[in-house]
Length: 170
Image: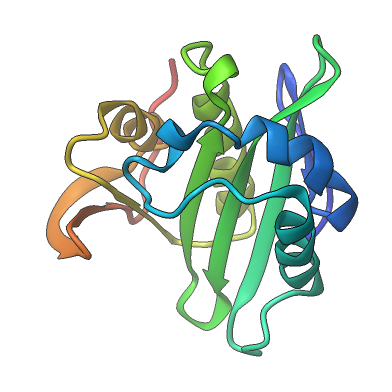
């Protein structure tokens, strides 16, 4: 799950500590944390975090997949996608973030859809995401990946789920 892959406009590269300096700038806008909490991390703290992520999950029952998103046309990193996978349950939870400067261009949708498609190819039969109820842009990304809102709430967020069937295409 740590291999690079690509979509039409994007390269999705496994997260490495060496990505931290560039990604600290991408993720520096405090507005990105309005729905997810926390605050932008400085490069050193992000490098440490990326080191932990690239080492993999300490839980042998869980696989972490974390990628930086590179926009080929601009030659720069623009965001991240991640999957927390429980292989025994054939289930994965997805998350995504795109820097403010690159939002509104379909990048989050393209990256998250590429990840969801890859997980489906690996026979992951249930995809989940948790989206703040006021975050319309993330809800649109989840819907584009074929996920639908459920009645379940976790930490104030709506659980979105896909459990088989044909995902929608634009």
